[in-house]
Image 1 (cartoon, rainbow, N blue to C red):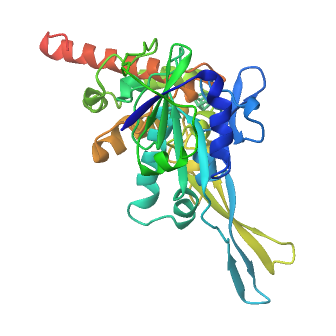
Image 2 (cartoon, protein in one colour):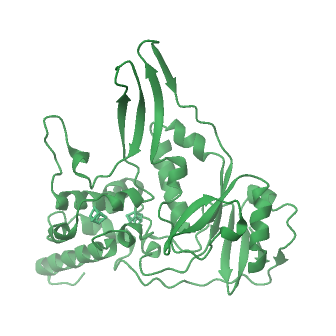
Image 3 (tube, rainbow, N blue to C red):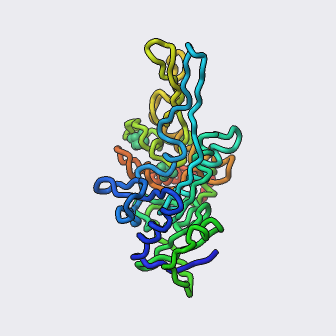
Length: 345
Ligand code: SF4
Ligand code: SF4
């Protein structure tokens, strides 16, 4: 791993240089407080000191809605969507969003590989950037440092006003060929960024808490405020549930098969034939959502399936905080343990 000094004023030149290798996507301001990854036409539009984008990079690899195939009964023909691999550079990605991509890779590639996801994902290049945690980020609590560089080709760590640029692999090194604005770094600065938002326990202990809180009152208390809008799932970079439906033309001779993101917080998600719904209450749905992030998949894979981006809290219209839910569950667990043993966990 090599590290160089990059002056802040040279960042637009770096973006222009990288754009020569492939279409480049980076955060842009959308409205007063929102940001979105968009294709860069003008490097001056890129905002690097953003807190989080509304949607993560998931939208590029698993689009919110996509056509899987077209069919025609008359012609007895099925035409599958023609997805081609595409080389793209994603610039200014935070470590938790990179970790979310690595988790999605696991979900989409293990078992029955998802061809469309793999084709869109395989040539992606990632340039990471550090960030200052705000009141919603808690990625450190789920084991992801601001400077976590796994998955990236290049990484920019902000040091004072400028950056330390890390070259993490051969591809990163090739991208920088001909770029002459880098200076040697004499000393690599390492520092811990302070997270205001935290989960009380180390993430290794959270599954143990979830062994004991399935019937906690916390779920009902959260449900009193939840309006079941599904925003928390739809914004989540590690949620990957989708619905597949056929859109048939009026003459019922042709149509297309569409795949759309779905949310386990929406009423129809768990509806089955006959109109039964095995999670028709908000508390059941909230519990399922949170168990998916900290218990069910974690038991199998060994890491939380939440990356601590804070989106589900920042964008919840009811102001429901995920860390508050988990910390209240921890408190509930501690009370249970104390009642049983007289020992504070
Ligand atoms: S975003 Fe908030 S209100 Fe909407 S479903 Fe999620 S927790 Fe409930
Ligand atoms: S559960 Fe919330 S904080 Fe965790 S990854 Fe999803 S949106 Fe981010």
